[in-house]
Image 1: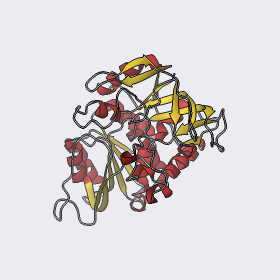
Image 2: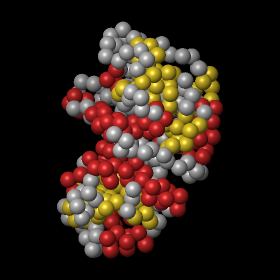
Image 3: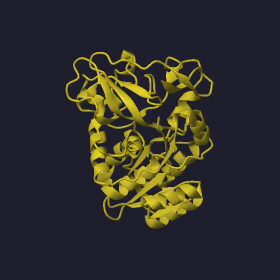
Image 4: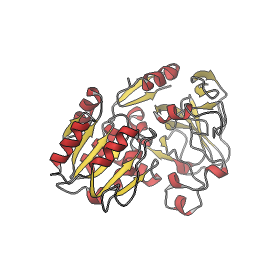
Length: 344
C-alpha cells in the first residue's frame, strides 16, 4: 500500500510502498477513507536526532477515519464494514486516568511503548491503518468521513480546552481565540454553540479572520496591539473571561496574558514554544493558566453527536495521498485554510 512516511530525522516526508498490516488479537484493520494532516507533524519533523522519541521510518497521520476491513480475535463490538473514526491518544487502559476515559493524560503510555498512530505508531496517511483496540474507534454512521475526521484532533483538542472554562463563559462574558486555523475555526464554532460568550477571534491573516467570521465570531481582528485595545473596550477594562491560544508562540502568549481578566482562564493549546510566567504579580488574581493535550474518549463521542446534529462545519481542503509531502509544504508556508485532509 502507499503511505506518507517520515524516513529519517531532517528529511522531508515521502510517499513509499509498505506492506498492508494484519490485525492481531484485539486489533482492527481500517481501510482509510480520510486522514487529517496536522501542524504538529511539522513540529515533530523539526525535532533533533538526539532524544528523538519515535522509531523511524514512521507513517504519519494521527487523524484517522475508515471502514473496518478486518478484525483480530476478541473484537466483538465493532463489525467489519463499520465506518469509524479513531481516538488518537492511546493510553495503558487500566490506570485511573484511562478508567475515566482520559487516556490523553495517561502517565504510563510512553513508558509502556504505547504511542498514538502517526506519533510513534504507524499512522493514517496510508491506504490502511491498524488500531490497537476497539475502544479506540467511534462509529460515525453516514457522516462524511472527510469532514468528520478533523474532529478527532482539530475538534477534540479545542472541545476539551473549552469545556474546562464553560463555567466562566456566561452571558456578558468574552472569549478570545488566538489563531484561526484548523483548530481555531472549530473553537469559534464550539464557543458559539456551547456558551453565551462574545467570541473575539485574532489572526495575522485576513483570510483567517474571514474564516473566523464565517465560523460565527462576532469580532475578527488582527492579532496585534490594536486587538488588546479592542478587548479592553469590549470588557470595559476588565479583561476576557477566557483566552485560548492556538498558536503558542512568544508573541501570542504575551498577548494572551495581557488579555485575560481576574478569575479568568488562559489556556495554551498551540506548541509554538512560547511561555507564560506565573507568579503572584505576573497574572491576574484568581486566574487559571494551563495547557491541555488532545481530549478524552467520551468527549470525542460527544463531538460526533454534535456533528450528527449539524452543529459543526469544518473547513477542509482535500488532497490525494501522492500529494502528502506537498501538503506539509503548503502548511509550513501558511497556505492551508482550515484543515487539510488526505483521501487515499
